[in-house]
Amino acid sequence: MVSLHHLRFPALALSGAALLAAAACGSTNTSTTASADSPTTAHEAVGDTTKTGATATSAALRPGSVEAGRDVYRFETFGTEGFWTNAVRMPQGMAQAKLTVLDALKAGVSFDVDAIPADLKTAFMSEVRTDLSPGKAPRLNDPAVMTQLVKANAVIGMVPKGNMVGVSCSLCHGITDKSMFALSGDRGTIGKRIDGPTPHQLNVGKLLATGANTRALMPVAQLQNPDGSTIGRAPKGLTANSTEAEFDAYFSNPKYYPLGMFDDSPDGNGNPVHIAPFFRQDLAAPYGSSGQNGDLNDFNNTVYTALFDQTNLTTPGGATFIHILGGTAGDSLIAGYKRVLAATGVQGIPFVTAHMQGKAGELATPTGKRVDEQKLRDLQAYLNQLPAPKGVVTDAALVAKGRALFVSQNCTQCHNTNQGQPVQSRLIPMNVIWPGYAPKVIAMRQPPLSPIQNAPGTFDDKMIVVDASPGGGIRGNALPLLLDLARKPVFLHDDEVKGLDALFDPKRGAKAPHPFYVVAPADRAALVAYMKSLDTDSK
Image (cartoon, rainbow, N blue to C red):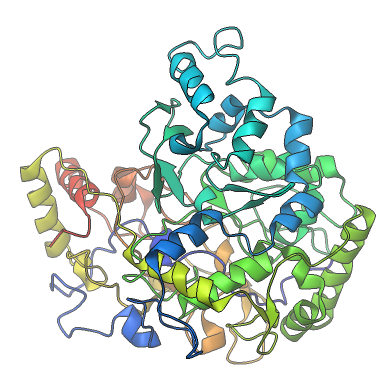
């Protein structure tokens, strides 16, 4: 497979909330807000009217509807069920694997208790109190019941569409209140839906490997370069000639594709990042790991047209987009992917329901297509008001001490104490957030694009190809929403730090990513308590 290092793709990860998990302490500004000079907020910087979701340009469109946006968030697929059913063949793979409800729970999938048929709900209430063995929990271990729940729209994020099944936002950005059941280890749950929070133990790679044709996901797999090298956690990359078993082995191995992570960039690198929460997007922006997307609707359109239906990259608009960005390397990528689709009998492509609009390569229409604008607007309205979970306070005095440290350590140089305020729009340069950043240039690109470059380790893997330089920005990290941190088990977008205490521990070293530390263990405990307490009511 041809190298993809000459390509530049749109940022498909969520906003900077995925990138940094805590404050960048150690600077000089002591303001308790974004900065003493009231810097431009994210939304002011991009001219984004996100409080109403009103970024669409057509006067015929109505203001975004929160209620309609909820349905888009939970159930809309824009026709991409064809990709998941006819290309990846997820339902067929689930049937072949005899996937059960218990299997899905173990993979971190959650179930909407309100959508479960009454007879099954009664049975589940009894079975979840057992040892979950097939003898004592027959329905939880019956593949037919799993199929029944998919058809009933009870599997959060798996959306039935006639005889096909698609995926929605809520698969990776939704949990439940655990009112019926929660599997040990913070895995799957059964309860009432809670949209927005990250399911941190969701085994996305395992779910993708369940598809009967995982090869259809080649654009987001870790690929081998012409010289035999590869970038990612796996020791060997895949090619267009790799077998289904080899693709499955990559996606299903948590060492290569860790839990709670998703590789959302079709760049040929194995660079899954931790799934970001998707609430209070009125406080976020710019969007994308690199801070590349200034408009949430553009970001979401890219997800639907280039990620949820990757076959759309083989259309004239998709191929033009890739050619503009990658030249002959892009042409080779498309050619290789077409061979895979042909070899696996994928027909009727593309599947996404979108109209021709704009020019291929533009942020608003990367493949020259755009899904329904009103639905994008509705989705934005829903995401803007979607509440973040409340913070966790177990010791108010300890939290107060932690807040004082947060201010005195100058974490407020970058972050707010008031989490109800929008984040700053600026990006933190890579050599600031990671003093040890010493990349090797792989390929030069036409200005304003930065060179393709890679440093040892995984922290910059997401940025090797994708950064904010297409819009004249720098290579760096967007600032996060400091919300729902009490549930978060790992930190930094590549999951390299296990826990908040470890994040602030100077043992990580002065050259490590996010090297802002608190020396005394008692002080670290206070700062951790403060971080876990944060919510949009924090001042």
